[in-house]
Image 1: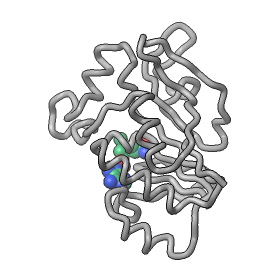
Image 2: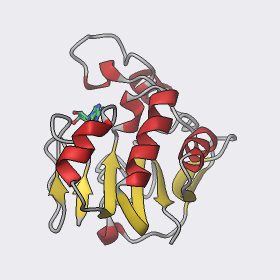
Image 3: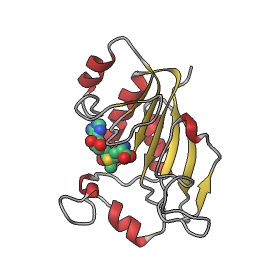
Image 4: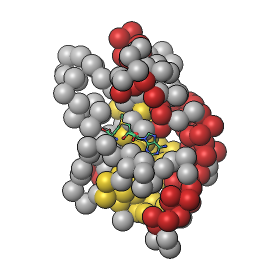
Length: 179
Ligand SMILES: C[S@@+](CC[C@H](N)C(=O)[O-])C[C@H]1O[C@@H](n2cnc3c(N)ncnc32)[C@H](O)[C@@H]1O
């Protein structure tokens, strides 16, 4: 069972898309009701964790951990606080760029690879970093299999990126539940 959390309009073949009213990262009881005795092989969470505070993200990570099978993984993509692009950072900052109806108005955190990996490790995950900027702003891509959990806002699929320019990157990690 492969489940998208906070799917919005996303639909990927083989994945069950869910929305906050079904699986709420802030409400464990929604997970207990939806999953019952089942557990997921994989969870996909693209540009959702930034809508949580860091403490909420810790609690949400623990929920994800508990509802995965041993050996399963949670793939998380969030805006990257270390991407050196003023316009990007202004858009993704906490509270978003200003207008209350902007998609980023609900942002509560800006993660970088240090803070996000700490959050996920605190829940018991081991973490592989797939795409990230280091604290010097340098972008890193560790080869990963897009088909095992598609992330649109990634180096190779986001329409804003090209060979010449990075227009929109994400911090993308796999959080793996030990067997
Ligand atoms: C920027 S949209 C991303 C939608 C989709 N994942 C994508 O990449 O296009 C943020 C999504 O996070 C969801 N969301 C926010 N808080 C959530 C929570 N506590 N639990 C589950 N989903 C949440 C929203 O409902 C929304 O669908």
